[in-house]
Length: 552
Image (cartoon, rainbow, N blue to C red):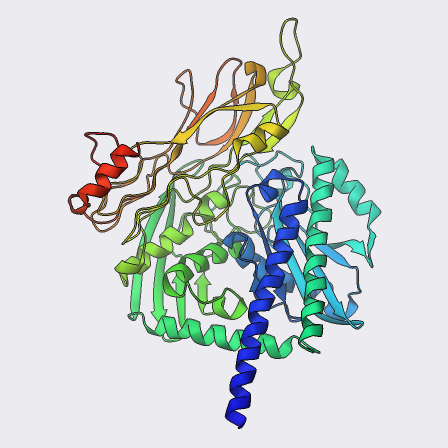
């Protein structure tokens, strides 16, 4: 009889766990529906999750990026050290964009909110979202320190017992080029957590739960055991790999030695390049976030993501390397390097379990921050159109690497998972025109399975006035590599329509009458090209992904 009760309790807790995931997914959807920034409502550059009172992540929304989710998993502990749970009250909301306490750069806002039931705190909700503008130099690599990159918000209350912190919002509005959007996004983040807290209380009432602790222990025990079981299936050993990034001042070497142990997977980044003087440096939490995601994709993809399922993945990041940036190094575009880390991890794991690893992909998002108006194009002149000041970011992706049994995905974000923003959404909020946005033929590496193709974009302003791009692109000098005999994907390209090549990183002006051309990289192929199914190759040619007579 006791065994039957125990089995029933297990089933009930599994139902509660699934319900908890639904709660945090509704939490995330609230943010998407109410956000002001196109980066959130169109691209889904956000995360949402629920935490126990010790700051351990119990569940995350399916919607969200690994860089946000897995670094946010660390950030709640920082909030609790400054504002212990016992001091929190209903209606409190806490916020920061500290890159070393949050998710890696100033453009990400993280909000933590307590949930109360019958007057007692029962859990914490947290979320992160990427906003368009926080002042400073704007999104880009040009800063020499984090203080040049924008407003630096320590962990503070933005709402106190439901009342907005007026002084905080005064500073926020004054420090941004887009004050209405930024303030609106902060309200959206708080509403997102309020939705989660409301649904949590309803769930606890329904299941007569006085505390989340028993459910948390069930989640953590089951997740850890499942992760360790998957690690046990791997061969023991140490495998090394390296990837090169285009860098800013010079190419960047990312090196890793991954060791599979009985109860953990450890990674040592010895040999990785040193810190940069520009904003491509990576705070350590962001390094752990994306490296853990890359490992998890291969080792335990079916295990839900939470504190316990991440704990067996452990990192040694040497001081002074670009993956362990100390305060106040510039970190604005830490994703350019950070998005390469899953490919770095997979290159190690390919040597252990080759049939479970993809080829390298475009990896880093191509999300050009665009700026225009008189500050860029100069004062108005007779017979010359005028456009207002604007600051906008659009998210785009190259191709993913081929999989052992399937082609790579075309123009799809991996590892970030954000959605490509519709050009109409960007054109609606800024005076820009996307004259071309189309798949890039022959950019996917040939192989038994083909790498995903990139895309070509052609961008200008209304009236063809000068505008600026703060370039944050990669995989131009170092193309994504194929695996198991597959060909490399095509490297990216950044140029003007008039023909001049542009730098892959840094602030540059597109002159009057010219257009910005972006050629996004394709993913690497997997397996020997001669082994590709002729029918699949014929379909690629018919679909315009491969041209007749190419090596595809």
